[in-house]
Length: 511
Image 1 (cartoon, rainbow, N blue to C red):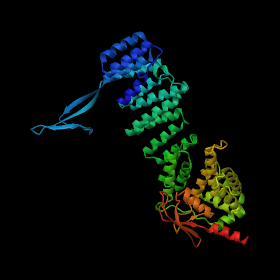
Image 2: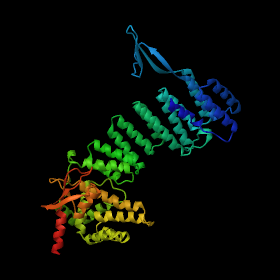
Image 3: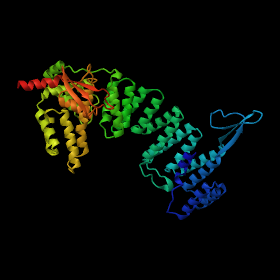
Image 4: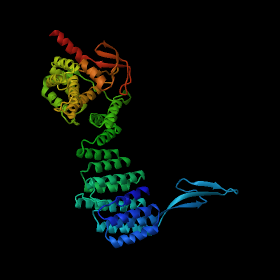
């Protein structure tokens, strides 16, 4: 009931300065309402009708008056316990006869009909007053007239198209936000009510009306996906979330829902694609959720398929079709993640690029690290960019380029923005996720890397492990004994397949 009054009184609880007599009537009405003085309210309505017979506020006042008279909470004494399980006070007399006392809302249907009729008249006279329409919707929902509530919402949406979303609220003041945004927010509340009541049929009817009139609205498309999910049809829900993402690609809630649905369907590869997008977003809350989900999907308990890096096959691909590899590298480096890239293609790009560049950027990357430690961020950034020309996927160069920009911004350099740094961090995160798909970090399934620097970057920036007790080379594996674990990695040892780093080291000696 409180919610209903908040909706219906929205036009009554705001003072107006343009007509003092209206303000006096308004204040008197609020006072009489707080005292539940129905006689005073009736007298005020009579005065209001004489002074402002066609005032939009008058329709709201009269509707509230009749609604208050229609809804009454009474105390019921009964010898039967309430069937709906509501709270009650039970008592038993000396003869063992039980009695029950509980409250019950009784509705005077004739007064309620009067309230609805008054609002209907007000809508005809003031079609752009959104509060009158929403008041009518709220009354319908209060008495479980969901079909009529949906019809009223449809009428409001159809009129919103006609008036180009230009709605008015209390005392004919324009809605501060654009009308469709305000109306959309109210519809979200109504949708929640219907879902909480498990009235999925009414919820879907309402959202279908919204989508019919606003087919590209991402919020309504997302609502449809939610309804289909609650209806037990996750495949159809996914379709609607994907459609919503086309119209709102920066909405991380939508992307997270898509990832979650793919995960529930067992499509780990697709789930990881969308979690990757969220993990590198500016939305810290969803990024944290996505990163945890990525790590969980990469845990051995998931029994996921490990994508083994076949260096012999990669060398053949690089030799026979280097331009194809370069094309995959360009797609992996694109500003917006190419979600059509498979993890096999990512692996071909990252590990194939190592074969293309053959470590030629190593001296530049070393210079970057030295300049960065000396806090010469401008020159370090120059060197990092030079290294990335040779190998666009060098992890240390990407990380240091992003960090240099962050430090330069902090020092007051206005020639860069956070988005400039984010571009480098995003590419690095894609590579971390690619490395994570090559193993589990244990002896049987070590993570595959292209350099020793990859190992440290992966542990620090992806697994958030900084303290190391020991590093030893066992066969072709670089094995680290960890002084700490993290929420992303719980074992005390981590194995890296150092086949490529050892090969580059051998080639360097031969030179």
